[in-house]
Length: 405
Image 1 (tube, rainbow, N blue to C red):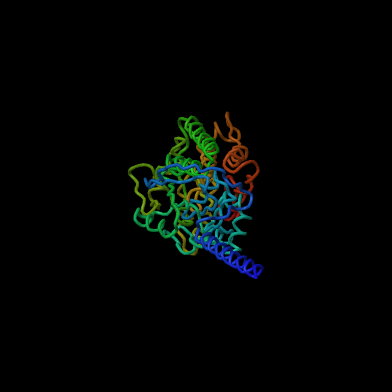
Image 2 (cartoon, one colour):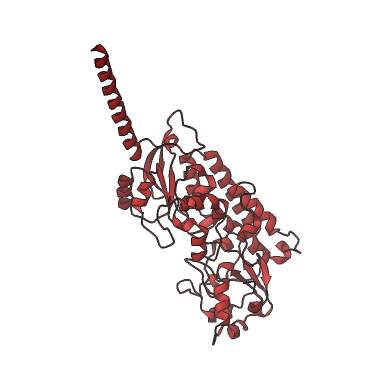
């Protein structure tokens, strides 16, 4: 009889233990006790900090409890890759695949090159947080919730109310990041990288990178020369690829080096980012610098039946003298920060060839400088110089029928 009572008690204990185990499992599914991704170490103590994000919203965060991270919106994942722990990325937007990228951009994203295998693996495993894309300005709440993140880094332009509501739905903070109007050279970029570093316990790494970026800005500014060649920026890619007349006033990578785009003149206005051909002809620039992202569009426009471009371009000295140069794209799902710096150095060789050109008094070797910059942003040999090149890379071009397309 005693044996039966003991057996009964043991069976009750076992049932209760099983029920408790199931309850803990349910709590875990709701995000209250996430398992750390492989390769991580369980933190021994909390590290609670208060930060203010780039939308001026305050967050109190235990940085040692962040094991599952997702990034949403144009450029958020790029900024994270510079200093964040990539083993904690548990899902990405669908646009981070090479197939999706090539369908939307004639460009390259060095961060995507660096982590292609990881991104493809996540996408193939259906670990995604929405389609993403330049026009996507909403959170895919259900898809994000499924990935049970501890934190979300966002470059979406959402209102404070929308962000607060989304945080309640997801049960985790949403940290807003920004690129700023000057892109790679903006203070917002510096602050965003430092913010990621602080939250991800990578402050030293973030400080090293942002100090390096500041040193590049100082170096570029110091290289300004007198009597540089006048430049027309053409085929400027922005929210997609564009043709010859797509340009930009006060182009950040020109401004940092004291290079003038002929369209900076207040006498000329742009219409939705496009110059008027008559204005370009009036300025008669010394040099044309083409964004490789729009090269195919330009060539198509040039060769189109009835196109006015061949005759119009013949009125430009730069065109007739074959002073046309190919620059790698800056933008692909917002600004490739490292590419802005690399292209700024290349622009110096074009605007001041007697100083910084191959035969100049102080030549800039673009491959050497690009490799240095890529290694600083991604680590040694993570992204190679050849990985960033399109159409044969930086070069002086002949007429369109010989262009490397």
